Image (cartoon, rainbow, N blue to C red):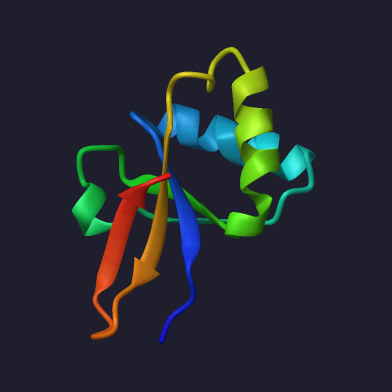
Length: 89
């Protein structure tokens, strides 16, 4: 079964790239990825990170004026059948 992870979505590519830069500067391990099909209402770029880093990610995003209200965080896990389960975190 696949691991559980968090995904941050953004309204546009500009905010996604700004968040990537900010989180990298904060030395939080992240991975840029295409937005999951189930979350297609956002732009095509998302950031994946470990749920253990959630507190640090939330703090960094909340401190940035551009990003504070321009993102959504989801927890991605898998059910017993291996199907992806996505919930707002």
